[in-house]
Image (cartoon, rainbow, N blue to C red):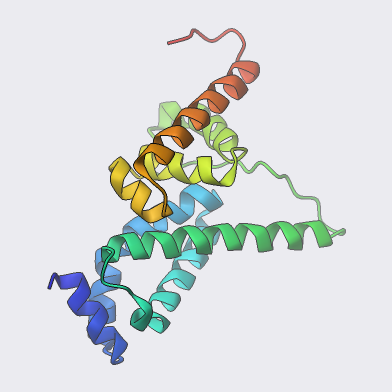
Length: 185
């Protein structure tokens, strides 16, 4: 049995040290994925905290067919999407405050000279359909292998390729309208 599975078995029994070790193994990936969705460091921290709370509480629900990382990514994506839906509802119901739907977002992995382009790209990624957005983030931002993306999303490899094709097409179209004078590659 691999180490993450052993840790989950220990977490089921309430082992805090095992939980800490699992957290250390996956916290960076969880935070980065949450950040790609939330586009706000504070929100990403909150999502990551919720993810690990769920991992601790639901360790006994892990099915051994999947990799632990796949299970944690699924929890992260679902938690991120649910967080964004709740946030939209709160913003919709909040009439006293002015909010911008498209945050200025600087991903920590982007070089300073590319920040403006990255902001625009992340704003545009945020407009994609949920499945396209997930496939794109996992494939191109988190740099996961396509098969792992398929496993995380619970779809076939062919479906992931199709989602990525549509996502790239939609991104090209939307970015072309935003930057009409930019050279095509």
